[in-house]
Amino acid sequence: MAAGGGRYFCTAGRGLEPFLAREVRARLGATEVDCVSGKVFFSTEAEPGELRKLKSGERLFLLLKKHTPLAVSRNKGKMLHEIKSLVIEEPKYWLDVISIWRNFHGSEGKKDDVSQENPLPLKRKSEEETNIATKRQKTEQVRETVSEKCQVKAGERCVVPERKSDQDCGTESKTSLEDPSKSSGEKPIANEQLSFSFRVSCRCSGAIAKILTSQEIGRAIGIVLMKQCGWRADLRDPDLEIFVHLNDIHSVVGIPLFRLPLANREYIKTAGLRSTIAWAMASLAEISAGAFVLDPMCGLGTILLEAAKEWPEACYWGADISDSQLEGADVNIRTAGLMDKIELLRASVKALPLPSESFDTVISDIPFGKKFKITKDIQLLPDILQEMERVLRVGGTIVLLLSQDLHKRMGGVTKCAENESPNAISDGASETATAKALNIDGNSSSLVNGVEESFLSSRHTRFGCLVLDGVYGVSLGRTDAFIYKYRKISTAGNR
Image 1 (cartoon, rainbow, N blue to C red):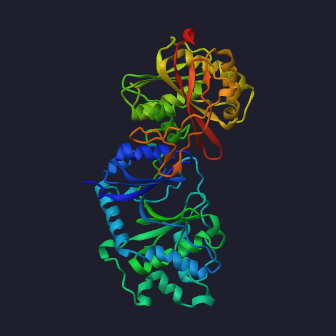
Image 2: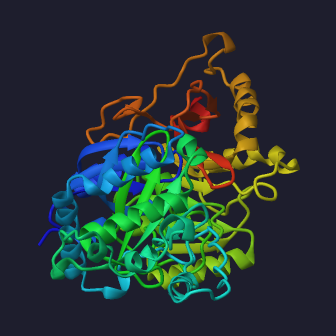
């Protein structure tokens, strides 16, 4: 039975939105695909198991509300009222989405995978545990005990409705914590079957963040949910999490489907390059059944693992000069059960012990310097590219991940190669490369539903027999990087 057919959104690293838009169409048969910075919205009736297979996304959510940015005013009360309306409006739709969520987890049959924040998400630090404040009142003790062990990702806060100050409401706070509907006379819209414990994770940025804090917003929404739905606030072990993101682009409310981010691969024991980037690189390589694929600087083997999992009918080879990296790659390959798919060898990328024109695809993360800081190794880049070109067959592709510094210097490297090639494009004949949108139908476009693709304008340059076929800007967290795609158009003797 399908997940029920719903509206979803998935978060993505900056620059990966077009890759994710293409993937949800191809893998899930998604419709109504809409991209904004950092998110892709879509509708699908895919099975739960298929939703789990998304490779270019970070976290997957059931969409409860997508609204235009809230009007910002200095009146906090007015703004909080508008925020509450995100919950109060269309209560039946909320219950319909909750029903889809229940059916989803019923078909999954895993209570321990209820949508909760991952306490240690990949490459992200969780916040420090909240210290218990001095005991003042019994209700405060309960609230502090609940929040003591709450850990969330940096930039988010989990909140429950707090006790109002003595000046505001006197003794009302205790009633609101236990069951706000009793004191207000309101009847919860949810019946016993839809009674949940919950928490609210709020992320707030832009103009609204200058007026209201994430904690204030989360508290307001939490109180409304308790009144309207009869749910119970629980930070430590909730059945359900409500994610709220308010910024200058949109107002979004959703329910995360999985406890762990999609980017956390269970088959990777030791993480190297972020798995979503590795998968995106492999998706550009046009890997076909029976193809020979090489990563000449494989490190821990993340690119090879992602490629072999997605395109298992190809043959994969990884090389590295470091014994420790090869040992780590071997452990990862064994953990993933891909020993029959991936071969490793110790070799320098400058002198690969491999026959010329023996591979259909070369994919690699160029690891220059310390944390992408440029070093004298830049001088080795032409030699590395030449060796990759040598082992690549005509018509094959090379996909490289370059740091910002290397990206800035690639013009000089390719210019030198152009000057040596009789077929090089002159400086006066510079062109803008056409952006190839990642649409499922293969049509060429520079936009994906209104969001500009990460493909960067560049000249049709060549390095030897390699012609540049695309440059994509992506984020690695604290720094940016660039995916370069080359295609080999002829042999060295036929330039």
